[in-house]
Each structure stands twice: as structure tokens, then as C-alpha cells.
Length: 256
Image (cartoon, rainbow, N blue to C red):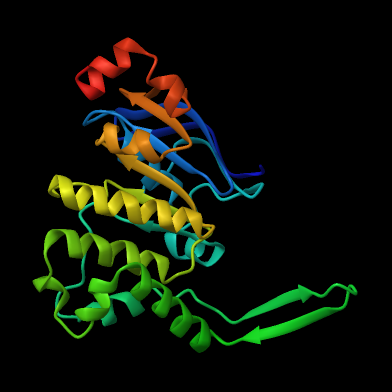
């Protein structure tokens, strides 16, 4: 599989504090890649630097081979990199559906090329308005509760529903790479399981996902590849199966 994202020797500083100390990671197209670690390990700094919210002091971030280091988030959204942020950041005063449409600001018209058995190519144009309607329908199919509450004030949703809304809002931008920052934060175990089931469904539909999480147990169940950060460095990396064989890691993160 082709690499959709490459992070090379990334360094992030907050004043005199070096939060990220030269990490390297890759994300292959069509996979779920996870960044695990305790509080203060540098997980959120890493994903925010990839998304241009936090500026890198050194290093490169490449998307489909093109350098995107320190580009503004709105420019990255236009390229197909969209983040569902830690804390959800639901827009109060707006309904559920209005929150979702806020995420669609980067959608532009598309031209889809299809080839028949004889090799003839047909071009189909879809306007931004059509794409927004189609994407909204897909999100309501993925999260039926959002359709039920579409006219409701978003701030009145439960924590789990707000997390679904935050993910749905990110999906409205039709991301090629979806960045998820602590999607299980503050949620009850049953809701966490439901959120992770939805993340797998998003992957199954073709979206590549980079997820930052403290819930190692649930994350290892869905991730294709995992990076474990400790104090701004990559301590371990590998498939879930490989990392579960690391007794020290299991004791530190899974209580085993």
C-alpha cells in the first residue's frame, strides 16, 4: 500500500520546552494507525502539528509525497486532511445539522471518471451542493441518532452523541485522512465501544485514519499499526499483535 502520510524527524517546541523530540511515523492508505501514550507523552502535540495547529520547529510532514509542514488547517482541509479535535468543540447555539454543515466548507465540485468494459471513459460532474447532500445522508446512515436529533441544539446532546457529531462534522469535509484526537475521552465504556465500532466502519468505507488515544485496549483492537510515545519520542512501534507480545508495554498500558 502507498504511504498517504509521512512524518520525518518532527520536532515541536513550546518555548524552551521540547515536546516532540524527532519522531518518525508513516500512515499507509486505507489503514488505521494509532498513536498511544500516557498524558504528556506528546500524542496531541504530534497530531496538532500534522494538522498545522501547532507549528513544527524542525522536520517534515508529507501528504501523498507533497510537503505540507506548517500549512494552515484550512489549506490542509482542502487537500483532504481533517481533524476531529480533542474535547469535540461543538458549536453552541447551532443545531446538530448546522454543526455538520460547518464541516462541509471545504467541499468543492467533483468530476468522477468511470471506465466501462470496452475502455470507454465517462465523466460525471457533481456539484458541491450535491456532494454535501450525499455526504450528509452517509453520516446520518452511520450515526442515526444525529438524524433523529438534527434540529436539536447541539449543546443538549449527551457526551457520546457530541462525539459522534464531532466525527460526523469532520466527515462532512470528505477527508482522505481523518485525524481523531482522543475520541473516547470522558465516555462510558459502552459508548466507547460504539464509537470504536463506528471508526472501523469509517475505515471500511475507504477513509484512512490516524487516531491519538489513551484507551490502549480498544485502540489495539482496531489499529493496523501502532506507535507508542513516551516523553516526546517513539518508544515502541509495530502491529497490535507485535505490541501485545511486549510484556512491559502490556503492563504499562493494559494492566496485564
